[in-house]
Image 1 (cartoon, one colour):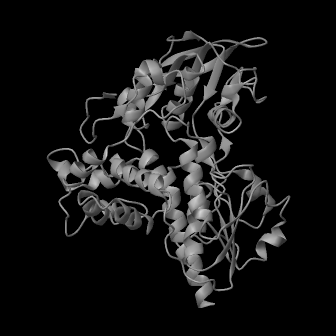
Image 2 (cartoon, rainbow, N blue to C red):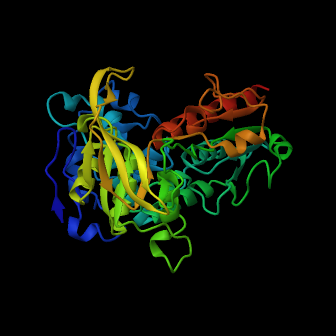
Image 3 (cartoon, rainbow, N blue to C red):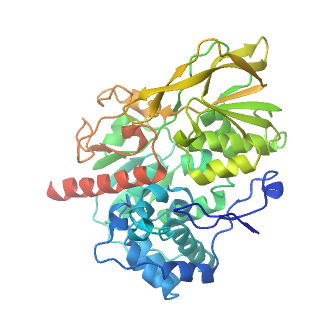
Length: 459
């Protein structure tokens, strides 16, 4: 097993060799050994005012669980984590700890911070191997709560409310729970058996999961509002496109469709499963976030020569540094400071016309705003085009409840208590904020569950 050289703020990655991993969907990162985990946890300074906890959207008691890891008491460490987070193996793999808890670690001022994410993953994996223990919950209080959407926000809200003593019914429109955890993130980053195990742990709290239930159609809005409270966590399922000439050609996909067909519909196993995507020999992926990296790496595993086009500089890439590094190692070509202007072809894609971009004055995010350079057009040969430029709130449920107030981006508007414009209806995660990270959706769902509890207890 190769160990990559660590960057500042990161521990060495125990990655499988590139020539092996690029041909399959098995997990890339091998994780920590017990000895490595203990040594790493011992580095924690056990700060009296731990900033790392403030940096965690779900407020895990990080020093407490690290103390137990350092002592070799892994079951106790797992119990501490699950007091605040019922999806630790997932979060340990996909959360951007480097800009959250680890960024706040005092050790990071002089050396690399404690590898909190890797340690959370280690603890969760160890517990799963030894037998998962359900946390305590209160007795049923007779109240019924509906949660719509079984993604990170919905699962978190369900777990929190079930532990408070509510009878939770979780509605999911697809045939599998998990949302983006199942259909959006590739198995080589997040193995699906791990997602299923942590979903089962949530269901073990007494949550009643209803699959293939589209609220507004198979479940009416009136039936939904018959519950004592409702949480909407339907995510961001509306893909954005660029409005380019040629976007209607066969072989043009949103990253959302591309990843869903591979992850949830087994398009990588066509013709065994009849849900194919075109296996491009020359694939262009547009975007620079984690979804773009995921789409590019999946396309490589399907056998394509992949080019990732991003309109800004490499240092502006919003994707996690580790995922960018892995994409490069796996043979994805990066074309920076460029943007597509047209998809070429007649009955199918033959290429993508792009234009070079120059960096101008900073925009609201502080990054330089890109602008096209006149006369700098060039063409990349391609037979598949994947747009990974973001997505908006899922419109399916929102359109069924016209009373819900919406923002300019189609998101459900909420107040500081995560209440919507409708009585007893709350919302959190991507449906309220637009596409963001898994852990931010979970943090919003936890806060919403507490607000729902206060509403029901206070009358």
